[in-house]
Length: 327
Image (cartoon, rainbow, N blue to C red; front, side, top):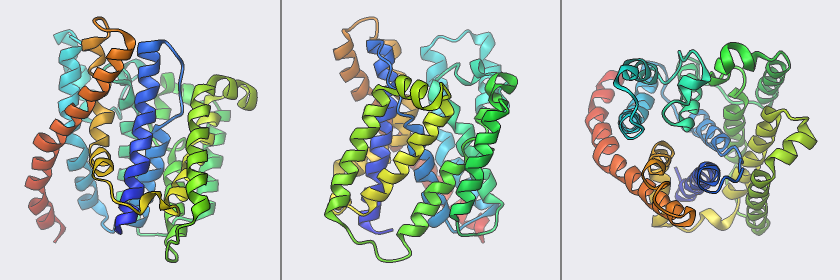
């Protein structure tokens, strides 16, 4: 992977993580609605990487993804159980559901019981499991269109209300188009040598600002443009993230290396896991402004600690064993 591409991926991941954090902190600390569907950004990026750069398939690929996700996730689950002071009698059921990435949750309450962002883990895992056992292929635009149509039909048939929304936790059929769209964008971008354009830099800034504005006015946009259908709004945001990703790849924003950007991109998964944890420590003791600063700093620290002491050692231990499995 070229340095500029690595920088572009980090830039997009950091932007998506910032939007996810802003969404939760705005409501928890300021009682202000903000929702830009930052998770959709990670769907696009994951699809881009998995459908363009990943060459392995089968159990080896699935094992690689599990060793990347599991360690920090389990630490986060334990941390939320302790900090939220969940009664001990509820631990076995919650742990069991989280051990299988919430794929068998009976309702939304269980999925959101510890940390609301965990809802997306079954979406990611289902995509990884599906990809693991598909042959290598080139993502096409008609694939994206077909999956978008499937999602629209699912919404029209109201399947998202089945078992209190349980169907939405699965990648099929509501979210698959986002992954495929990221894969298709990557395939288009790398058919030829990527050439940076000055207008793409300005376009990236404009799209980033538009995404933030949409997050501020998401309720009005959802009601006026999509007749109250939130999934349609999320679909629009996925398209904006895809356009932003394309602009960043072709802009000069990703040309210069940044150690801070690389660091934040590396720990972005940890920030996703832990950013709601400090809320339970500080919300009752500090003003909203101070609490936000403290929570953000604590989230970055926890994410780094997870990366340095949990994720990296575990991946280092697993790497030779996975290599033998791949032979």
